[in-house]
Image 1 (cartoon, helix red, strand yellow):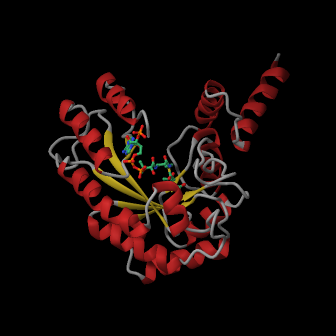
Image 2 (cartoon, rainbow, N blue to C red):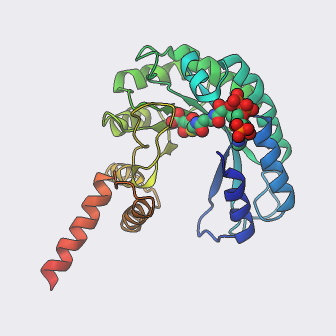
Image 3 (cartoon, rainbow, N blue to C red):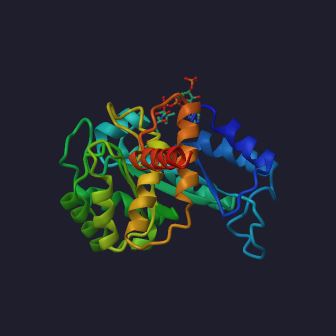
Length: 278
Ligand SMILES: CC(C)(COP(=O)([O-])OP(=O)([O-])OC[C@H]1O[C@@H](n2cnc3c(N)ncnc32)[C@H](O)[C@@H]1OP(=O)([O-])[O-])[C@@H](O)C(=O)NCCC(=O)NCCSC(=O)C[C@@](C)(O)CC(=O)[O-]
């Protein structure tokens, strides 16, 4: 979060073209975050698609969103936000309203929904649904259910989504955010697909991981996710070959391992084919 403002300023100054609509997400857990973001947005009116401006297309301009991140357990809320859940939700009200007033989306993550590094596996799915309902009532456009520790399993993912449905939360308002620490991300994705979820978070090269969740690995890699969804006959619109190149490039730049098995397989197959053709 420390240099979020510089990154946002760079994006809106450079007018980086994107062939398909892209949304940049700005973590803002409090009033300071909203103030920083809205000051930059004020300076760059017209450089991004305003959610209220439905008159014309984005003509390549990016969309911006503010992201709040609640926790499903008190322990993780203290570690990740330095406050209890109720206080964090109070703070998020202003952030979400600030985003709406600035004409941008508000995304709300809920962390450790399927397992907490401090409270273990028994995260109450009804509590998650209650927090999600509060965030949606504040005006959040979307809830991203974060399996931050990767402790999620098929059965507990199913139970969580059953509770979300029972609480009256629409599938269209839910994204699933799986980390692959125990290799269950795509299994949990399959269960979520079965229950009608169609928005999934991932990270190229499997980058990421929450600093406040000891041992957590990155998100399920975009390359693995794309390969899996396309194997089911779904069209993601993503060029897997190009995504594998990006994963190799950015993990190299960040001096991190490329954690995508599919990305490495795609690159390996391409190399083998090149060798046989020479
Ligand atoms: C929320 C606080 C700041 C409360 O921390 P605090 O100590 O209660 O608040 P504070 O107001 O005393 O601020 C402490 C320091 O943070 C700075 N600060 C204060 N607010 C901001 C801000 N908006 N943007 C940038 N800097 C900020 C502030 O300036 C100060 O800096 P210092 O004076 O010590 O140099 C702290 O707990 C914190 O930084 N939490 C975030 C930790 C973090 O980055 N976690 C990972 C986010 S991603 C995630 O959670 C998971 C997710 C979303 O990916 C999904 C999933 O997998 O679960």
